[in-house]
Length: 83
Image (tube, rainbow, N blue to C red; front, side, top):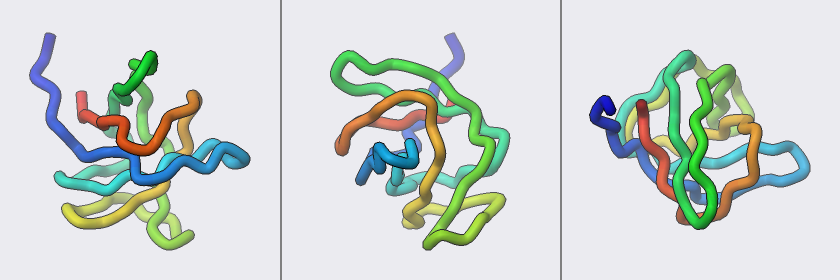
């Protein structure tokens, strides 16, 4: 298994739009694959789109808080890794 990089953690989840807010510790870009881990949850998903303050962005840097549309429910505090 390839070494996964700790990207950050879920700071919020907006169920009605299926968007996870992630506090970023390491740079991210569209096309990266992420793994979401916490509780019973453990799934991978590629980043198709990303927003910062409701504006579409192609990348995010350390310290940013990004919104990413995801396919499964997550909770605050879940860990996010780049795979």
